[in-house]
Image (cartoon, rainbow, N blue to C red; front, side, top):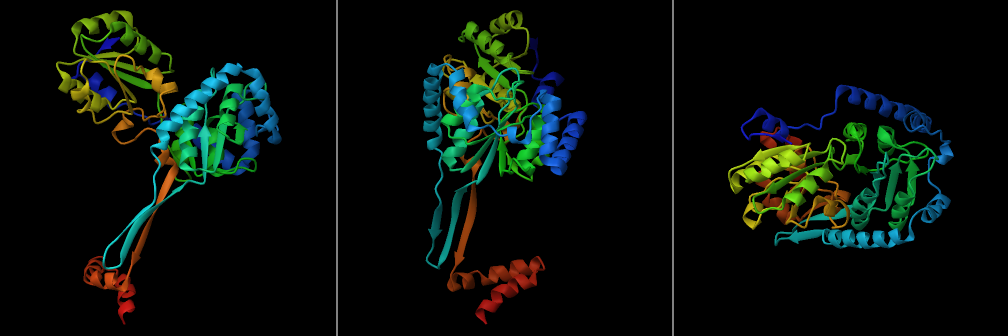
Length: 406
């Protein structure tokens, strides 16, 4: 691990890590999106052959019910019970997040409120490169279902046998996802955003992916909503002399399993810093003088995952403003949140925890403002309306008020 001083340029670089894609990625994705817009399914099939090495016919793009039922034969039956337990954990967490419409009234006949409704359709991207991201299925689909989204579409790359990993299909089936397509990469994002003959477009796209998927989500934002632009996974561990070095080492090494994963140890202990520098190859060590400085460092880094392994962490936690998810105590490694705890592991990366939150139920809902005025209430606001419309030189706006009193 490399030691970084708080006052160094290296620390500033860590704090300003960017999720903006390289020009080559940007241009490649731009061409693919335009190709999907113009040629739909034909372009999807071409890119699936080019990038996944699989030639599909248009009718093979959608996963069939036979393929879904057959997936149960290809996995360990005990795994289904594990999935059901984890799904229940996630359900319990997100049921606490549901929102209800509301309204307020005053004596002059003014009624104001918000009407909350779920989005009509959501597309979920699930990577499936060297290994399938099974956990991402329930971590993205469940908040959408609890919000009340009726149409949930799952897209994931096909394997060389023209099929989808059976574990992904089983999880999707347990969650009652009926639309699953064998398509990946930026072409899948384009299809969800723009629509093709086979894949009707959606209102929002969520889920993790590589640099091309992230760039595609950025470019289609506006045609659809997206959850966030996600970069490489990252963890910051805050520890002191009371922390268990074996736990810290294991968690730092776990982070290195992610492609381009970023691991940072923020510590008050010189001994611990020296030990980790010898035993862990990748990552950064930032030594701080006290709890306040540790919190300041964390807030500037705004990490995706923050592990707090110090003794008596409450004072430190009160100082934390920016983190995607916080894992408190020696028995709460990031892996717990990745798989079984409940909150979604779709979290802001690259310092975007300064203004983004982890995926939640409200991300799949929209609110509509409700406004109702009586004649008495309108008359009470008449003078203010006249002054404001006059300053903005929108006199006909005030005419629409005045006419109601003639």
